[in-house]
Length: 252
Length: 252
Image 1 (cartoon, chains in turn blue, red):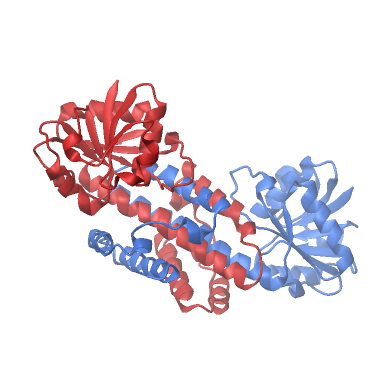
Image 2 (tube, rainbow over the protein chains, first blue to last red; image 1 turned 180 degrees about the vertical axis):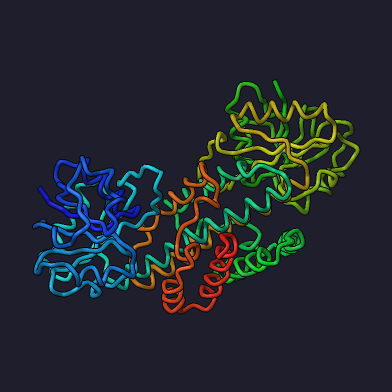
């Protein structure tokens, strides 16, 4: 049995609490949040607190709070030489106070409050300073059914940055497509199967091999017609930049 | 029974031939291609030809060739007053020669040679000049299990343009993510579940509501750190442009 205390009450903390609670091998010992009202609805399921001084012994303290506050809270912990890990994609492992054993348990996925998340689809990036602390975080990932990867701080930062491209920026392209179709009074729904297929394709082949379309073919007539169609200057700029990037990637 | 003759031998033509052949309500009467060698492997399944003059009567002639050649081939057809439709996203219905009844049967999906395609996931955008020709194209879509939409030429062009954003440009973002992770020697595989989840999310909620991340939050520290991390000037330019687009969309 792995005993874990969770610090924080955001989406990641809440999803982790829920999935940990479902396992037979992880026991959530305490749940801390500065503002206790945010976790008070869970008080019948777990011991909750808003005082760091009330934290009792656990195998792991998992800090799932905003990046900027991780360093401070790790300093404020009233104990030493215990395993403390944060869940951030971009905060260095060295930002954790060195009075405790340090680790990172970064779930690389998009977390929203409403949607249920199957942790089979949430790869966990693990880093520890002490080699002997690695197995516990690995067991934690395995207990929730997640794939896990040993990833150092530089690699994790690269993943976090790459995630912005494939998640936030991709989603903004969907948004632009929504604007383009809405302007002509045509249903965005028609694009949904294509959106899904585009994502599925690169599960098996590389994005390089998956590429198609006017930019890859350097089909100047279609590109010109598309640019003429676009009225929004920002959409035009994105069209140009992405088209040139594709052309360069494919040697056109 | 709907009798269809297919013109062209590209990915769309081949996928349509295969799915039509599987149905009980569509019979592929003839398959034409200028270069007959490209379809000769199908000669035991269907009557093939490289001469327009050999085309016999059919309920529908489906032109699935490159955009630039559609107008010419429609002029060269040696018959009149029959139903002729093209499968292009960007060619006007009026580019078809008016000696025949004209239609569009545009499957909005990404077609690759290798991958099997389930036409349940291929919405068909239908347009006809004559109202009485609409039901036949609709029946064709229904016979292959596709959703179908009545879409005029302007709307179809908007969809074709929007498809470039959600397919080609999105795929290029995946490619950039691949470059970023590879440069740090970390597996692109770790991003695959996020790629899929991002696409799944907008099947149920709008891209506007689905947005998350540093740009939406206007998290200046993270944005600056990401820009510092990016060494490739083109990646930096895309990061800036997409970040500003997200900020504008979400009023930051």
